[in-house]
Image 1 (cartoon, rainbow, N blue to C red):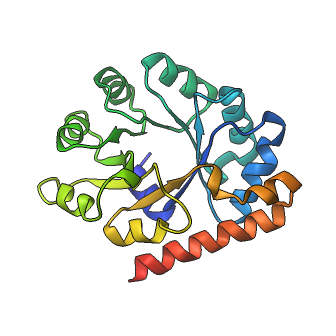
Image 2 (image 1 turned 90 degrees about the horizontal axis):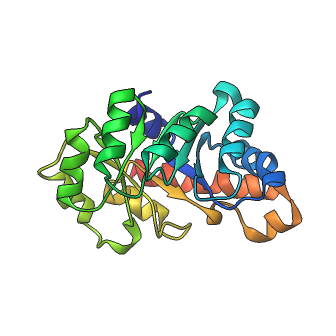
Length: 212
């Protein structure tokens, strides 16, 4: 799986964390109908493995379903067995990186510092989750990519509708949104049409930023 190509074509990652099991498919379908086909299910959520299976069966080859918070080899194994097509982590755990490299598992490892990034590169991962991106100053990614120019980044942590375009303009390849990817009132009312329209607007803002 070529994550650089996938992120380039899908710059908005939908992070599903603590989504009720019975709402999983409707919630994800609303996001998909808004134009997003790139999903992460957080493994520290209840029913995460079951949700991964549900989403893989539901979307088939129409969407990419990954597993986040893969901070141990055991979690990584469980997630891939459930059908996760790629993994994400908030950190650069060498054991997890080595396992994914050895097994040929696509991964967006988490990094913050140059040392973190070089650890990711050591194991062959050059598309990286910058976490927590929202706590870093503007210009940080440009400085990071100066000596590490073979790398690209997805901003996760502190990203919202008001600043997502700014992250793209700073040089991030993509951004990840969690519970704020859908308006809470629409979710509460199960107004999925309104939710989908909201996602479509997010994508428009990202596209505009990419064209700047």
